[in-house]
Structures are given as structure tokens and as C-alpha cells.
Image 1 (cartoon, one colour):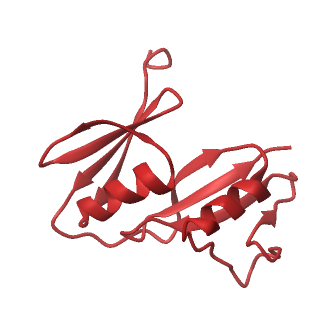
Image 2: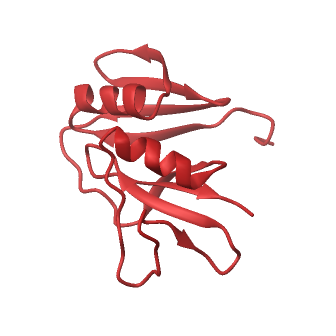
Length: 124
């Protein structure tokens, strides 16, 4: 029923200008529209709408992920732009913060300016 329609993901922000800079300049997403309510970005056929809210508490789990190739070079490039990758005690991560899952997928986590947890995943 909906499988042939484009998906839009939504994330909240209390810091619209910082989010705009992060998603556009750091992550490289293209702005499609911007108003007092939200900033909409486009990335490889999907839309991401960063919605301005008064307050919220970020979730402790991943809310947005990117399927990528060459995770090590992506992590290094984002680190050079100031992104801090997270390290967890319960995962055996390398020096870059990359964890190799039992399925051999490689995952690294980081946060946006509002504390939304994002991930990069390279599948085998």
C-alpha cells in the first residue's frame, strides 16, 4: 500500500540554526525547504524534516541511520568536521568507535546538536 511512496523521517530540534548547519554543512544534506516550523533536507531519495519544538528529551537509542560504504573513511571525514563518535562499554569498538556486529556489519554512533543518536552502518 505505501511501499511505492517516498518516506519522510522526522527529528526534533530546539536549536534550529545549529541543526541546519550540522545537517547541511557537516553531513552534506541538501536543504529543500525552510520555515518557522521545520527545515527539510533531501538525501538520496528520502526526506528528513527537522522540526522545531519547545523541548524534548533525546532517546537513548538510534533514531536515524545512514547505510554507507567505506565506514572508516566516513568516520574520519566526519571526525575532521568535529563530529565525536561514541564509545560504549558493552561493545568492542575500534579506535575510531566502529563496532563489528555478529553479522559483520560495521556500525558507528554519533549525536546531532540536540542529542539525537545517529548511526553509520556499512553492511558486508
